[in-house]
Image (tube, rainbow, N blue to C red; front, side, top):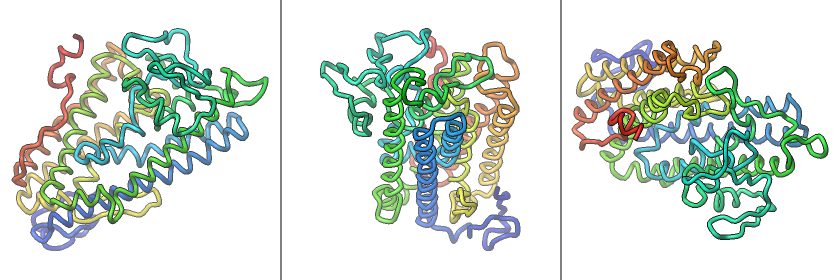
Length: 424
């Protein structure tokens, strides 16, 4: 992690810093270039880890066992690390925001995809297809149209099933569909334990559990292939000449606004609100971001790290190399060194709070246990992260003012802005 910058180091690199040239010599164009370079690296790493996931999924399908299932789960968990750090690019970049729902939409009505426990229930007024179970049904009627799903293909998932009937909970693609197919439902409520799908759900023939093991394997394979193609597309958008990079660089002030919009909206409405405070208010383990795998503590941590990456202008790649350059921190330090110090301290405080959630969960106190009503220690941990994220958002707003940018309306959340509305 970069040490705090000081005004004395404004014209030269200082021992202990990770490295960009800063203060008055830093242009907005250089800051945007770093931001785009980091995006390209993060999406490239997300693609690489998804390709590793595909190899593990192929091995599971070819030879189902406890070992190959666990290897596929491990590959999925590893794939989340770089991807979660990209989420800070969503809110300020239309190319990303329009695309993101294909790969990271949540929460999902998993009964659309495969078998679920009897306690799950059936169709609801909100979602007629909540228990469609495509794996078990090669033909079905969707919005009045007969669908032939004999062959489960990436096109079927993306063009027909994903957000079927205009319902956002009909998530048929992306990381969380794959997560469900690897872990199955987490039926533990607020007790310890993630989903426990058996490897025999992928065994062909009479030893198949859950029924339709061939179609389940086809779905898992199609979803993984689709994830790779979607990541290939977004990676290309951030390379030289790509739409996202070109749009960003066309208007430097709008580009800086995009950076800060992503930071503030993810900090406040999305992460502090929808992903953390809301779940605590509802005491609902289904509000976990990675609810099947019990990986939510890592999702929160790497979302926070992504915000810090943008401000400091540095990203540690999965191969150990570092992408770094001119940063927002440099721009702010040139105008208000005290505010830059404040912003860095706030980001560090958030990472400590999210890190405490992460290490506590890894020690055995799972995130869904933290959400249980009356769990004082869990509420303290979650609210520590929420409050730190809200606090750093205030500093991000001051950065917007110091850089003399137009006011930015960050994403909000009823859980923060109008708590009574959550229960109406």
